[in-house]
Image (tube, rainbow, N blue to C red):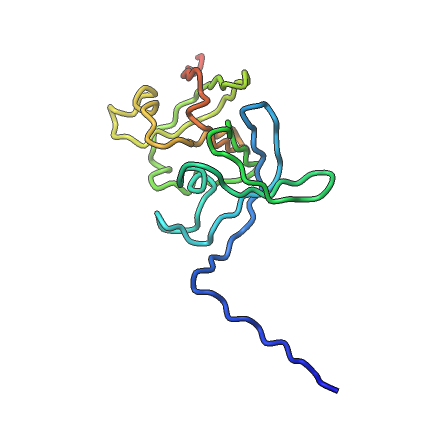
Length: 170
């Protein structure tokens, strides 16, 4: 009678542990897909954990997303170009941006290529006097934050058709 002992395989030094973070994607065809992004515990580009915005802005092409539905879940590769917006419920990811606390906030309305309109607040990380909405609109990143209460949107600027500043009425 031979007994076989299982020996755990050594972890690869190249393995990166990921955390699942919930989101809903709105795609360029209008479809909404709920599921999870995979984010690393440490970012390669800044201090702290990787954010969904980091994943979306990281490179061109496809990214993995665990899509959930009635039939279960499945990891799907989505093309970044066709993600219009990623919606995060109750997620404070935008607040982890350096300078968030002292950045100028602008209330805006965005008309998207899908025909939907989002309203919320953007943070303009520019020196005073250069913190207008027009300064913000010279986006350096493809995906930017738009906050609305407990909802954070990560919007693909290539799908923004119109950007309006909403001035509060006295």
